[in-house]
Image 1 (tube, one colour):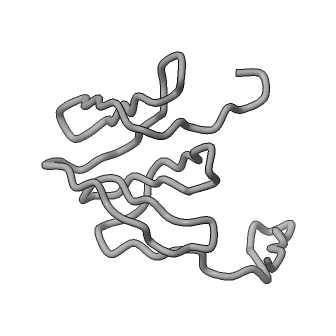
Image 2: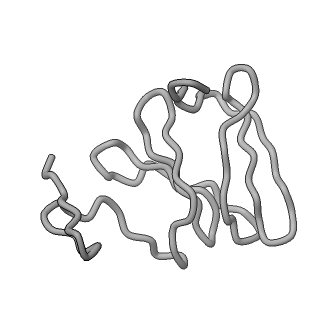
Length: 100
């Protein structure tokens, strides 16, 4: 893994591109307990392996702006879209952050 440096003027150096978005832009990032990276985009929810490989997309009928894992087991997804709030139960759990 290459380290990325943030300079005083806000520019970046080093590092590598983790993933690119072919549907608008990414908005909202969460991790699951397996270390996979979940990101919202204009066409739904994208799931990436820790190495940046796209594992799949959950296509939605609206632009997804943000999302979170919730519930006692963190296995409910709440997705904020253009004009709706969607929820679904999944068979994975979002990562538990310290202090949450």
